Image (cartoon, rainbow, N blue to C red; front, side):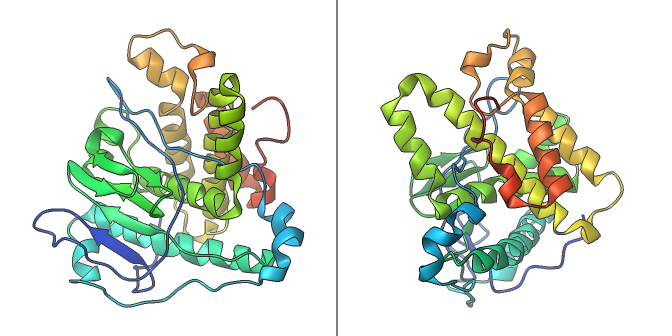
Length: 293
């Protein structure tokens, strides 16, 4: 995927030793999600929204749109943090593209927008949600609105999961950003409350959140289709398949049990990513509209 180089409109924090601790351009904060690597693979990204931007437009129209924040380096060099390795550059480029894609959609809906920050760490780090560890994979922390990534995960995703490629990596970023969207429009809080009230439904609601984040990732890609190279879509769909709960369970030598799913089956994840890709419409990502997934 051919993305423009990042600029100083993004906020990046670097917790990697040697990379300089705490670099950044300005940005915003996000919600909550998780990508957990378990046994032979990874147990993917996480969170989702009960309401779409369109559904909230009338409710929040009086608030007025808030532009994406711009800013300069806080500490150290943004360029240094984003260019330590190729995966860092890709992540920063994806963040800039995601901000530019989603900010206008929020503005059109009259909903305040604030960009998330990207936090790089190596093996261990600290987030507003507690300790960050590589074994968790990429995750979104709602407390500090940060997308947390140890870029070594991308090598593991390729070698262990068979989900390599630049578009597959962009899909990871776009999925976590989808949790940010869910956080901003209040879906995450609604789901958390529904899970608290009805614990037996907790996993099913988690699946719906995750699938919506997959769909949002597809929406971003669809709105940047002029940047997509041949083979990119196949990379993304392959990654979605490889991180399905049933595929991960089978790879770990466990019989897939739907009641234990938290992120969705391979078929579900591919279907919702494809829906976002085909429609380019965030309002088509209402995974809560029916009793099924």
